[in-house]
Length: 215
View 1: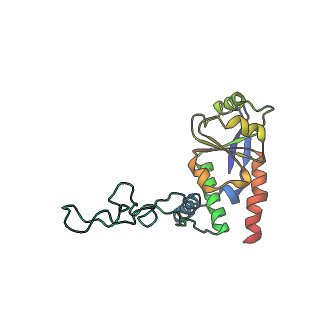
View 2: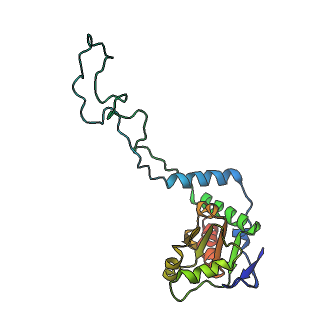
View 3: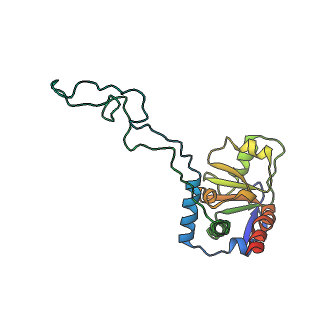
């Protein structure tokens, strides 16, 4: 599959051949759903926690005697019916949301998602993506010239580029990731995927070659 290549001014400079093993994978919706659900579950912090009546301090003494007062019977001031009492059926931080999914499956789903991005013209390939100084205006002008302007964008970099990362972090709807860390969930959460042409070589070396060795 061939795709147009743009420069940082938004001008078409030619075409590039996409690796068939990465960008020519058939979509399996069942596999995609399973992988995305597991990745989303693994990102859950699970820190929400409430105390039930046994965890709340106090309430050891019976508020009033059982009979003769005319009021409803009460055994503890820490009942869920009382203010300051425990919470019934609230979230607990003991719950584990983690779901395990094999590496081969994760990689296959990533290839499916990348293939769909390329097929639907949501992949923007640049001949290069470099800035000399970390200025937000420079990066914003680059994005403004591209077809993805105004949409949510995931930018994949071939390596750690501190200047570009610092200049991009204040721009709305823009996420930065290294190409070696690409995953299906982040790609799906953004409409466009932008990356320089050199990322294709990195993807073949880090993703495609590993899948061939282990298959």
